[in-house]
Image (cartoon, rainbow, N blue to C red; front, side, top):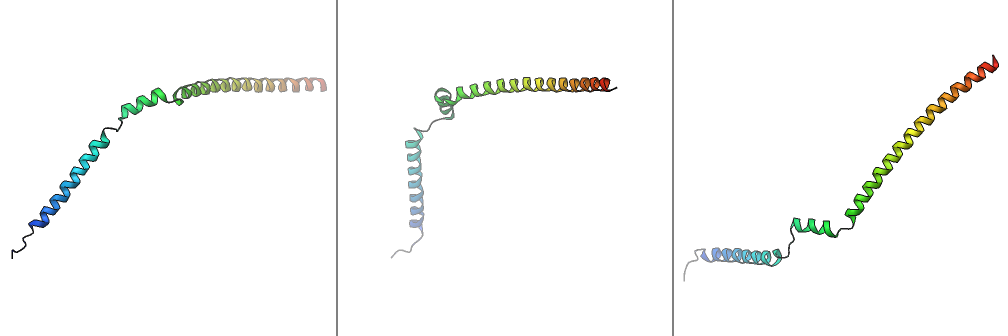
Length: 99
C-alpha cells in the first residue's frame, strides 16, 4: 500500500479553481457581448428621452417667470414710494387746512 503524499488534494484544488475560472470566463464572454457602454446609454438618452426638451422648456419658463417677478417687485417698490409721497402730501394739506 502506498503512503498518501497529499498530491491528490492539490490536484483537486487546482481542478476546482480551473473549473471556476473556466465558468467565469464563459459567463463573461456570454454576458459581456450584451453589456452596453456608457456612450451608448448617453446617446440613447439624448435621442429617445422625452424629458430633455421638457427640461429646456421648463428652464425657459422659469427664466421668464423670474423676469416677471422682478418687474412686479420693481412696480411694487415704485407704488410704495408713491404711496409714501402721497401720505406726506396729504399730511401737509391737512396741516395747512387746520392751521
